Length: 427
Image (tube, rainbow, N blue to C red):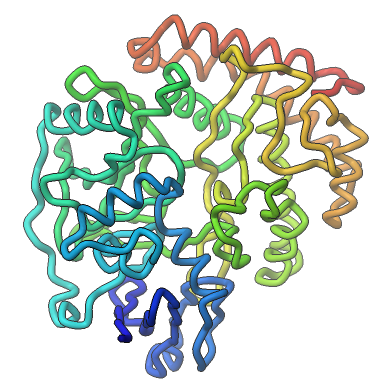
Protein backbone atom coordinates (compact mmCIF):
# COMPACT_ATOMS: atom_id res chain seq x y z
CA UNK A 1 0.00 0.00 0.00
CA UNK A 2 1.41 3.38 -1.03
CA UNK A 3 1.06 6.30 1.38
CA UNK A 4 1.66 9.94 0.52
CA UNK A 5 2.66 13.18 2.20
CA UNK A 6 2.57 16.62 0.64
CA UNK A 7 5.87 18.45 1.05
CA UNK A 8 5.72 22.18 1.68
CA UNK A 9 8.67 24.52 1.48
CA UNK A 10 7.62 27.50 3.53
CA UNK A 11 3.96 27.91 2.62
CA UNK A 12 4.36 26.59 -0.94
CA UNK A 13 3.62 23.08 -2.09
CA UNK A 14 6.89 21.67 -3.50
CA UNK A 15 6.11 18.06 -4.24
CA UNK A 16 4.95 14.67 -3.00
CA UNK A 17 6.68 12.14 -0.78
CA UNK A 18 5.48 8.57 -1.27
CA UNK A 19 6.22 5.49 0.80
CA UNK A 20 5.71 1.83 -0.13
CA UNK A 21 6.89 -0.80 2.39
CA UNK A 22 9.43 1.53 4.04
CA UNK A 23 10.82 2.77 0.72
CA UNK A 24 10.34 6.52 0.28
CA UNK A 25 10.45 8.41 -3.00
CA UNK A 26 10.11 12.11 -3.71
CA UNK A 27 8.99 14.02 -6.80
CA UNK A 28 8.71 17.77 -7.32
CA UNK A 29 5.40 19.13 -8.60
CA UNK A 30 5.56 20.46 -12.18
CA UNK A 31 4.00 23.72 -11.00
CA UNK A 32 6.72 24.15 -8.41
CA UNK A 33 9.48 23.49 -10.93
CA UNK A 34 7.99 26.19 -13.16
CA UNK A 35 8.11 28.84 -10.43
CA UNK A 36 10.95 31.37 -10.78
CA UNK A 37 11.43 31.42 -6.98
CA UNK A 38 11.52 27.65 -6.37
CA UNK A 39 14.11 26.30 -3.92
CA UNK A 40 15.39 22.71 -3.84
CA UNK A 41 14.58 20.76 -0.70
CA UNK A 42 18.18 19.49 -0.75
CA UNK A 43 21.36 19.84 -2.77
CA UNK A 44 21.09 16.07 -3.11
CA UNK A 45 17.69 16.55 -4.80
CA UNK A 46 18.16 19.38 -7.33
CA UNK A 47 15.20 20.93 -9.10
CA UNK A 48 14.31 18.59 -11.97
CA UNK A 49 11.45 16.37 -13.14
CA UNK A 50 11.43 12.73 -12.17
CA UNK A 51 11.45 10.66 -9.02
CA UNK A 52 14.28 10.58 -6.49
CA UNK A 53 14.87 7.03 -5.17
CA UNK A 54 15.14 5.87 -1.54
CA UNK A 55 18.95 5.90 -1.43
CA UNK A 56 18.81 9.67 -1.96
CA UNK A 57 15.58 10.45 -0.10
CA UNK A 58 16.16 8.40 3.06
CA UNK A 59 19.34 10.18 4.26
CA UNK A 60 17.54 13.51 3.93
CA UNK A 61 14.48 12.28 5.88
CA UNK A 62 16.52 10.63 8.64
CA UNK A 63 18.51 13.87 8.92
CA UNK A 64 15.36 15.65 10.09
CA UNK A 65 14.84 13.25 13.01
CA UNK A 66 16.65 12.61 16.31
CA UNK A 67 19.70 10.36 16.16
CA UNK A 68 18.68 8.30 19.19
CA UNK A 69 16.98 4.96 18.46
CA UNK A 70 15.40 5.07 21.94
CA UNK A 71 13.89 8.48 21.19
CA UNK A 72 12.55 7.27 17.84
CA UNK A 73 11.00 4.26 19.54
CA UNK A 74 9.30 6.53 22.06
CA UNK A 75 8.06 8.85 19.31
CA UNK A 76 6.68 5.90 17.37
CA UNK A 77 4.69 4.74 20.41
CA UNK A 78 3.38 8.26 21.12
CA UNK A 79 2.13 8.72 17.55
CA UNK A 80 -1.53 8.09 16.85
CA UNK A 81 -1.85 5.76 15.08
CA UNK A 82 1.52 4.31 16.17
CA UNK A 83 4.38 4.93 13.75
CA UNK A 84 7.21 2.65 12.66
CA UNK A 85 10.46 3.64 14.37
CA UNK A 86 12.40 2.19 11.43
CA UNK A 87 10.52 4.20 8.82
CA UNK A 88 11.21 7.97 8.64
CA UNK A 89 8.09 8.52 6.53
CA UNK A 90 5.72 7.37 9.28
CA UNK A 91 7.58 9.40 11.91
CA UNK A 92 7.48 12.59 9.82
CA UNK A 93 3.84 11.90 9.07
CA UNK A 94 3.25 12.68 12.72
CA UNK A 95 6.20 14.93 13.71
CA UNK A 96 7.01 16.67 10.44
CA UNK A 97 4.93 19.83 10.69
CA UNK A 98 7.82 21.94 12.06
CA UNK A 99 11.26 20.69 11.03
CA UNK A 100 14.70 22.21 10.55
CA UNK A 101 14.60 24.60 7.63
CA UNK A 102 11.43 25.50 5.76
CA UNK A 103 10.21 21.98 5.05
CA UNK A 104 6.86 20.72 6.33
CA UNK A 105 5.13 17.39 5.78
CA UNK A 106 1.35 17.46 5.47
CA UNK A 107 -1.12 14.62 5.14
CA UNK A 108 -3.15 15.09 1.93
CA UNK A 109 -6.39 15.47 3.89
CA UNK A 110 -4.82 18.36 5.85
CA UNK A 111 -3.63 20.30 2.83
CA UNK A 112 -6.62 22.64 2.50
CA UNK A 113 -6.03 23.86 6.06
CA UNK A 114 -2.23 23.70 5.91
CA UNK A 115 -1.80 27.47 6.19
CA UNK A 116 -4.04 27.83 9.22
CA UNK A 117 -2.53 28.55 12.62
CA UNK A 118 -4.11 26.87 15.59
CA UNK A 119 -4.16 28.34 19.09
CA UNK A 120 -0.79 28.52 20.82
CA UNK A 121 -0.61 26.86 24.22
CA UNK A 122 1.21 29.41 26.36
CA UNK A 123 3.45 27.92 29.01
CA UNK A 124 4.53 28.98 32.46
CA UNK A 125 8.09 28.71 33.76
CA UNK A 126 6.80 25.78 35.79
CA UNK A 127 5.60 24.01 32.62
CA UNK A 128 8.97 24.41 30.92
CA UNK A 129 10.86 23.50 34.09
CA UNK A 130 8.75 20.34 34.36
CA UNK A 131 9.70 19.35 30.80
CA UNK A 132 13.39 20.05 31.46
CA UNK A 133 13.25 17.83 34.55
CA UNK A 134 11.57 15.14 32.45
CA UNK A 135 14.43 15.36 29.95
CA UNK A 136 17.02 15.04 32.72
CA UNK A 137 15.28 11.91 34.02
CA UNK A 138 14.70 10.50 30.54
CA UNK A 139 16.71 12.07 27.68
CA UNK A 140 14.33 10.41 25.20
CA UNK A 141 11.35 12.53 26.35
CA UNK A 142 11.79 15.14 23.60
CA UNK A 143 8.09 16.04 23.44
CA UNK A 144 5.49 17.22 25.91
CA UNK A 145 3.71 13.90 26.32
CA UNK A 146 0.25 15.37 26.77
CA UNK A 147 0.11 16.34 23.10
CA UNK A 148 2.94 14.44 21.42
CA UNK A 149 3.91 17.59 19.52
CA UNK A 150 4.25 18.09 15.80
CA UNK A 151 7.87 19.22 15.64
CA UNK A 152 11.01 17.29 14.76
CA UNK A 153 14.56 18.27 15.66
CA UNK A 154 17.65 16.40 14.54
CA UNK A 155 20.70 15.47 16.58
CA UNK A 156 21.73 13.35 19.52
CA UNK A 157 21.13 15.87 22.33
CA UNK A 158 17.69 16.07 23.95
CA UNK A 159 15.83 19.28 23.17
CA UNK A 160 12.44 20.77 22.36
CA UNK A 161 11.21 23.70 20.31
CA UNK A 162 9.06 26.62 21.47
CA UNK A 163 7.57 29.83 20.15
CA UNK A 164 8.77 33.02 21.83
CA UNK A 165 6.50 36.06 21.74
CA UNK A 166 7.48 39.04 23.87
CA UNK A 167 7.90 37.58 27.34
CA UNK A 168 5.80 34.49 26.61
CA UNK A 169 6.79 30.96 25.61
CA UNK A 170 4.38 28.61 23.94
CA UNK A 171 3.73 25.47 21.92
CA UNK A 172 2.25 26.54 18.60
CA UNK A 173 -0.24 24.48 16.65
CA UNK A 174 -0.96 24.24 12.96
CA UNK A 175 1.23 26.26 10.60
CA UNK A 176 2.84 28.52 13.22
CA UNK A 177 6.60 27.90 13.42
CA UNK A 178 8.66 27.56 16.57
CA UNK A 179 11.39 30.18 17.05
CA UNK A 180 13.74 28.81 19.72
CA UNK A 181 15.30 25.51 20.76
CA UNK A 182 15.63 24.68 24.46
CA UNK A 183 18.26 22.19 25.64
CA UNK A 184 19.04 21.14 29.24
CA UNK A 185 22.46 19.81 28.24
CA UNK A 186 24.01 16.36 28.36
CA UNK A 187 23.59 14.76 31.82
CA UNK A 188 27.05 13.17 32.01
CA UNK A 189 28.79 16.51 31.36
CA UNK A 190 28.39 19.06 34.13
CA UNK A 191 26.74 22.32 33.02
CA UNK A 192 27.08 21.37 29.35
CA UNK A 193 24.29 23.81 28.42
CA UNK A 194 26.34 26.63 29.95
CA UNK A 195 29.44 25.29 28.16
CA UNK A 196 27.65 25.44 24.79
CA UNK A 197 26.37 28.97 25.45
CA UNK A 198 29.87 30.24 26.30
CA UNK A 199 31.49 28.54 23.31
CA UNK A 200 28.87 29.89 20.89
CA UNK A 201 29.40 33.38 22.26
CA UNK A 202 33.17 32.96 22.03
CA UNK A 203 32.90 31.92 18.39
CA UNK A 204 30.79 34.98 17.67
CA UNK A 205 33.21 37.22 19.59
CA UNK A 206 36.09 36.17 17.32
CA UNK A 207 34.14 36.80 14.12
CA UNK A 208 32.70 33.37 13.31
CA UNK A 209 28.96 33.70 12.54
CA UNK A 210 27.17 31.63 15.19
CA UNK A 211 23.68 30.95 16.45
CA UNK A 212 22.57 33.37 19.14
CA UNK A 213 21.93 31.87 22.54
CA UNK A 214 21.11 32.72 26.12
CA UNK A 215 21.40 30.76 29.33
CA UNK A 216 18.49 30.88 31.73
CA UNK A 217 16.51 29.03 34.36
CA UNK A 218 12.91 27.88 34.15
CA UNK A 219 11.51 27.04 37.57
CA UNK A 220 15.03 26.33 38.82
CA UNK A 221 16.07 24.24 35.79
CA UNK A 222 18.97 25.61 33.71
CA UNK A 223 18.92 25.41 29.92
CA UNK A 224 20.51 26.94 26.87
CA UNK A 225 17.96 28.70 24.68
CA UNK A 226 19.09 28.98 21.06
CA UNK A 227 17.45 31.38 18.66
CA UNK A 228 16.59 29.56 15.43
CA UNK A 229 18.51 31.09 12.53
CA UNK A 230 16.11 29.33 10.14
CA UNK A 231 13.27 31.59 11.31
CA UNK A 232 12.80 35.31 10.65
CA UNK A 233 10.19 37.16 12.67
CA UNK A 234 8.24 39.89 10.87
CA UNK A 235 5.66 42.26 12.25
CA UNK A 236 2.77 39.87 11.70
CA UNK A 237 4.27 36.48 10.93
CA UNK A 238 7.34 34.27 11.22
CA UNK A 239 9.00 33.07 8.02
CA UNK A 240 10.77 29.75 7.66
CA UNK A 241 14.20 29.81 5.99
CA UNK A 242 15.27 26.58 4.36
CA UNK A 243 18.43 24.82 5.47
CA UNK A 244 20.02 21.38 5.55
CA UNK A 245 23.12 19.89 7.12
CA UNK A 246 26.05 18.56 5.11
CA UNK A 247 25.08 14.92 5.60
CA UNK A 248 21.74 15.67 3.98
CA UNK A 249 23.35 17.77 1.25
CA UNK A 250 25.72 14.93 0.38
CA UNK A 251 23.21 12.08 0.74
CA UNK A 252 24.89 10.55 3.81
CA UNK A 253 22.95 8.81 6.58
CA UNK A 254 23.23 10.56 9.97
CA UNK A 255 24.62 7.35 11.47
CA UNK A 256 27.76 8.10 9.42
CA UNK A 257 28.13 11.72 10.48
CA UNK A 258 31.66 11.25 11.86
CA UNK A 259 34.36 11.16 9.21
CA UNK A 260 36.03 8.05 10.59
CA UNK A 261 32.63 6.30 10.37
CA UNK A 262 32.54 7.09 6.64
CA UNK A 263 30.99 10.53 6.90
CA UNK A 264 31.93 13.69 5.05
CA UNK A 265 35.27 15.29 5.82
CA UNK A 266 36.42 18.76 4.90
CA UNK A 267 37.24 17.82 1.30
CA UNK A 268 33.76 16.45 0.56
CA UNK A 269 32.15 19.48 2.17
CA UNK A 270 34.40 21.74 0.10
CA UNK A 271 33.36 19.86 -3.03
CA UNK A 272 29.68 20.51 -2.25
CA UNK A 273 30.37 24.23 -1.87
CA UNK A 274 32.38 24.44 -5.09
CA UNK A 275 29.56 22.65 -6.93
CA UNK A 276 26.84 24.98 -5.62
CA UNK A 277 28.50 28.40 -5.26
CA UNK A 278 30.43 30.81 -7.45
CA UNK A 279 34.18 30.28 -7.28
CA UNK A 280 34.90 33.31 -5.09
CA UNK A 281 32.01 32.59 -2.74
CA UNK A 282 33.00 28.93 -2.47
CA UNK A 283 36.55 29.93 -1.51
CA UNK A 284 35.21 32.18 1.25
CA UNK A 285 32.86 29.44 2.48
CA UNK A 286 35.58 26.78 2.52
CA UNK A 287 37.91 29.14 4.38
CA UNK A 288 35.18 29.80 6.94
CA UNK A 289 34.63 26.07 7.51
CA UNK A 290 38.37 25.50 7.90
CA UNK A 291 38.58 28.35 10.43
CA UNK A 292 35.60 26.87 12.28
CA UNK A 293 37.53 23.59 12.43
CA UNK A 294 40.53 25.51 13.78
CA UNK A 295 38.28 27.13 16.38
CA UNK A 296 37.14 23.69 17.55
CA UNK A 297 40.80 22.61 17.69
CA UNK A 298 41.60 25.67 19.80
CA UNK A 299 38.80 25.15 22.34
CA UNK A 300 38.83 21.35 22.39
CA UNK A 301 35.55 21.01 20.49
CA UNK A 302 35.25 17.32 19.66
CA UNK A 303 31.80 17.10 18.01
CA UNK A 304 32.06 19.28 14.87
CA UNK A 305 30.95 16.56 12.44
CA UNK A 306 29.14 17.08 9.14
CA UNK A 307 25.69 17.30 10.78
CA UNK A 308 26.91 20.25 12.83
CA UNK A 309 27.53 22.34 9.70
CA UNK A 310 24.63 23.47 7.52
CA UNK A 311 23.81 25.49 4.44
CA UNK A 312 20.94 27.90 3.85
CA UNK A 313 19.03 27.44 0.59
CA UNK A 314 17.03 30.20 -1.08
CA UNK A 315 16.03 29.94 -4.71
CA UNK A 316 19.30 29.27 -6.50
CA UNK A 317 21.46 30.69 -3.72
CA UNK A 318 23.45 28.60 -1.27
CA UNK A 319 25.22 30.06 1.77
CA UNK A 320 26.78 28.73 4.95
CA UNK A 321 24.57 28.73 8.04
CA UNK A 322 25.83 30.06 11.39
CA UNK A 323 27.73 27.68 13.62
CA UNK A 324 25.81 25.73 16.28
CA UNK A 325 26.28 22.88 18.78
CA UNK A 326 29.78 23.91 19.87
CA UNK A 327 31.20 22.91 23.26
CA UNK A 328 34.60 22.32 24.85
CA UNK A 329 35.88 19.09 26.36
CA UNK A 330 38.63 20.92 28.30
CA UNK A 331 36.87 21.32 31.70
CA UNK A 332 36.06 17.60 32.01
CA UNK A 333 38.18 14.77 33.46
CA UNK A 334 38.30 12.85 30.16
CA UNK A 335 40.20 15.70 28.47
CA UNK A 336 43.67 14.63 27.35
CA UNK A 337 45.36 17.35 25.26
CA UNK A 338 47.43 14.81 23.33
CA UNK A 339 44.76 12.18 22.63
CA UNK A 340 41.46 14.07 22.29
CA UNK A 341 40.12 13.86 18.72
CA UNK A 342 38.40 16.13 16.24
CA UNK A 343 35.29 14.84 14.47
CA UNK A 344 36.92 15.63 11.10
CA UNK A 345 40.56 15.13 10.24
CA UNK A 346 43.13 17.81 9.38
CA UNK A 347 45.53 16.44 6.77
CA UNK A 348 44.52 12.93 7.85
CA UNK A 349 45.03 13.58 11.58
CA UNK A 350 42.21 13.36 14.13
CA UNK A 351 44.16 13.68 17.37
CA UNK A 352 44.48 17.32 18.28
CA UNK A 353 47.97 16.72 19.64
CA UNK A 354 49.13 15.72 16.14
CA UNK A 355 47.90 18.91 14.47
CA UNK A 356 50.09 21.97 14.05
CA UNK A 357 51.06 24.57 11.40
CA UNK A 358 52.32 21.97 8.94
CA UNK A 359 49.03 20.05 9.03
CA UNK A 360 46.96 23.22 8.65
CA UNK A 361 49.02 24.24 5.62
CA UNK A 362 48.70 20.80 4.04
CA UNK A 363 44.92 20.78 4.65
CA UNK A 364 44.63 24.24 3.09
CA UNK A 365 46.38 22.97 -0.05
CA UNK A 366 44.01 19.96 -0.16
CA UNK A 367 41.09 22.39 -0.15
CA UNK A 368 42.54 24.65 -2.82
CA UNK A 369 43.30 27.49 -0.42
CA UNK A 370 46.39 29.64 0.03
CA UNK A 371 48.33 27.89 2.81
CA UNK A 372 50.18 31.01 3.96
CA UNK A 373 46.94 32.98 4.21
CA UNK A 374 45.27 30.15 6.16
CA UNK A 375 48.23 29.86 8.55
CA UNK A 376 48.14 33.59 9.25
CA UNK A 377 44.36 33.51 9.79
CA UNK A 378 44.70 30.67 12.30
CA UNK A 379 47.37 32.63 14.17
CA UNK A 380 45.05 35.64 14.21
CA UNK A 381 42.15 33.45 15.37
CA UNK A 382 44.29 31.99 18.15
CA UNK A 383 45.17 35.46 19.44
CA UNK A 384 41.54 36.57 19.25
CA UNK A 385 40.30 33.54 21.19
CA UNK A 386 42.94 34.11 23.87
CA UNK A 387 41.97 37.77 24.15
CA UNK A 388 38.18 37.19 24.31
CA UNK A 389 37.91 34.30 26.79
CA UNK A 390 37.74 36.56 29.87
CA UNK A 391 35.16 38.83 28.26
CA UNK A 392 32.85 35.99 27.23
CA UNK A 393 33.24 34.20 30.58
CA UNK A 394 32.19 37.33 32.46
CA UNK A 395 28.56 36.56 31.52
CA UNK A 396 26.59 37.30 34.71
CA UNK A 397 23.68 35.05 33.76
CA UNK A 398 26.09 32.16 33.18
CA UNK A 399 27.80 32.79 36.51
CA UNK A 400 24.43 32.67 38.25
CA UNK A 401 23.85 29.17 36.84
CA UNK A 402 27.17 27.61 37.93
CA UNK A 403 29.95 30.04 38.83
CA UNK A 404 32.39 27.30 39.84
CA UNK A 405 32.08 25.52 36.49
CA UNK A 406 32.36 28.83 34.63
CA UNK A 407 35.65 29.56 36.39
CA UNK A 408 36.95 26.10 35.47
CA UNK A 409 35.86 26.53 31.85
CA UNK A 410 37.60 29.90 31.69
CA UNK A 411 40.78 28.45 33.20
CA UNK A 412 40.87 25.35 30.99
CA UNK A 413 40.18 27.28 27.78
CA UNK A 414 42.82 29.89 28.56
CA UNK A 415 45.38 27.22 29.45
CA UNK A 416 44.78 25.29 26.24
CA UNK A 417 44.90 28.32 23.95
CA UNK A 418 48.06 29.64 25.60
CA UNK A 419 49.74 26.30 24.80
CA UNK A 420 48.87 26.80 21.13
CA UNK A 421 49.96 30.40 20.63
CA UNK A 422 53.54 29.61 19.63
CA UNK A 423 54.23 29.16 15.93
CA UNK A 424 55.50 25.62 16.32
CA UNK A 425 52.87 24.50 18.84
CA UNK A 426 50.72 21.45 18.40
CA UNK A 427 47.31 20.57 19.83
